[in-house]
Length: 489
Ligand code: ADP
Image: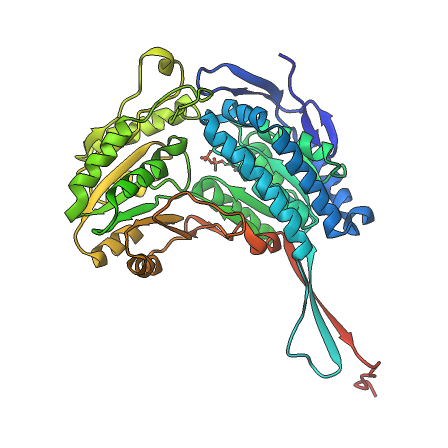
């Protein structure tokens, strides 16, 4: 298999680092081989980026012209949705239908920021001092780093590249070790769409080597990271040391709450999707379920029945709900958490096993699992598992419920199921999370900011704010009427 080339400052070349592979989590077959970026590749990418964003042709390019490049990328994505979805599914094992959604969302993100950069306005700040006009303008930051995880590559990469480019920066992407392919595919599309050379580079490689060196590079002026809280905390230190902004989308242990007046059928379906889609490999997965005791039994019965009906299968086959987990090591970590839950006294209501027959035995599948009989203090309720594991707990009063739901180092998202929106809104006020879904879950809009409270992150992506996060403000004072400051007389 010919090794894939990486994209360094507008040039396709073999990476100078150690060999890497991308494998299909369904059967371990090879998607591609490549060489990681070396530190020399990194230097070339950063230096090329620094030249590219300073180039007057780019600095002076009007927003609608930058937007046109993003629109072309979106067109190219939409022309090949099925092919891209298939590549995305091979890269990380997600069912095709989910990958299709991610591909479409990447196109939508490119279109949104193409338009948003045209709408961005500076401000004349008030109150004006007499004789002075004060302006506040938004300018690009320069060379920025985007470090991304493996669970939704095309969408999470576009979520960083599109606003970074719309804002006038040069961006260097370090994709996750397990999924280096989609960022390279995106780089080809940006090149085809006419993005000037150097404004986008893609440097696959190990986080601790190439990701670390990228974040520390003196010319890199912002770090945007999505991934685990441990790495996020580390990168926050790197950013603090350099005094540069860091935007961090980190882990979660999101509570889902079913109130006594909920529509149980609607709730059960939504909860099932919220935890088990993407085989639970989502930072926003609704992994802790609190159900009012009055409806606990029927809701849990419905949920178990729906979960037992989920189809584990090949990611590329229509009708598959649950694909394989990303790697055998990750599957082993999920299995250990379920064993730990058993040791802590948990009762496995369904799932809990590694499938050992048929094609499922060839990949990294794990059965969707529901655990009862534990309290929120259990390790499986406090630690992010990032797999298809749900813990269900009854509650009696709302005061206690709020304390339990907030008893987590994380604060990414929450779900509320109730037929009374006033109750939902009052409850939403009390939850320490960045996103609350009411009678829905995992719903996204690119114009709505996303990010975490507490250890789930810092900063927000998406929306106009998300574009401004890739810019810095400059204030300009203009004296009116040529006054002379006679201080020195
Ligand atoms: P996960 O546990 O979900 O894989 P990680 O936080 O380990 O999340 O990885 C997310 C991204 O961060 C990946 O691209 C990974 O290579 C990168 N990464 C990991 N460690 C570091 C590091 N020390 N410096 C920079 N990037 C890193």
